[in-house]
Length: 303
Image (tube, rainbow, N blue to C red; front, side):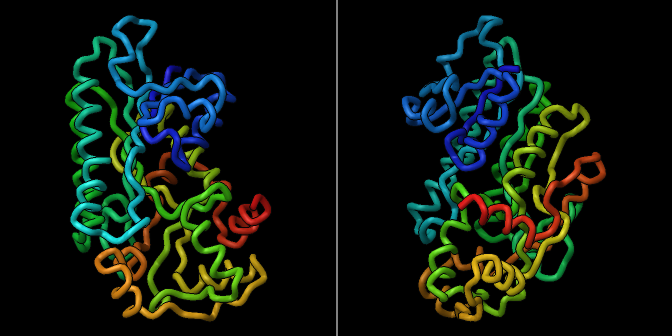
C-alpha cells in the first residue's frame, strides 16, 4: 500500500511509520519540514512540503490517508492566538487535504482522521461510548467536533472515513507521561484537583495496532474510541504511576491553582471522560494492554 500521513513526525505518526515500514508499505509524510522526515520516521519514508508533489499518475496513487496533524493542545494556555493555531492546524489543514483529495483522479479507499475523547466534553460519571452525544461543549469539544465534521466530507468523494477519538497515550517516546515523570521523580506527584475525574488511557502499541486494524477493516467507518476498556480515575492513575516509578504520589495539585495558571485550558486536567472502546471491541479488535499497571510497567521499562 501507498500510505500518506499528515502529522507523521508526531508521537503516533512516527510509530505508525516504523510499523508500516516493517510491513513493506510505501510511506509519504506531508510535513512543514520534509527534510527531517526520513530521520524522524525512518529511512525510505518520503517527506513532501506540498501535496501537489504527488502527481496524478497511477504510480503516485495513494491507497490510504492518515490525518493526524495538529498543534499540541496542552502545551500552553489557550490564548486567542493559540486557539487560532489549534484550529488552523486541524480544521484548515484538513480542508486543504480535502481539496487535494477532490482533485485526485485515483482516490484513496480510506481516510483515518484524528480526533480525541475530548469530543464528548467533561463527561463526569457518564459512561461514554461512540453512540453517546457530547456532554459539555467546551473549546476542546468544539475543536474535535469541527475536525470530525470536516473529515467526514470525504465520504461524498466515495472515501471510507474513520474517526479515531484518542485518549491519553502511554509511551516512552514522549506525550503526556514525559511531562509527569519529573514531578513524580522529585516526589511531587499526586492527584489533580479532587482526583475523581476519569482518565481514558491507551498504550502506544494498542494505538498503532488499532489504526492498522481500522485501515484494513473494510466495514469500519465513523467514530471509534481509541482507549483501553478500563478507564481509571485520576487519583488511581497517580497512585499507580507512583508505584511504578517507586515514588510517592500524595502531593495534590489544587484545582484553583490550575485555573489561575492555565485558565480555560485547566478544563483538560480537571475534567475527564469515562470513555470505553465499544465499537472496537464489537469489531473484534483485541487490546494487548487492558491493565494500567501492566501498561505503565511496560512503558517504564523502555524509559
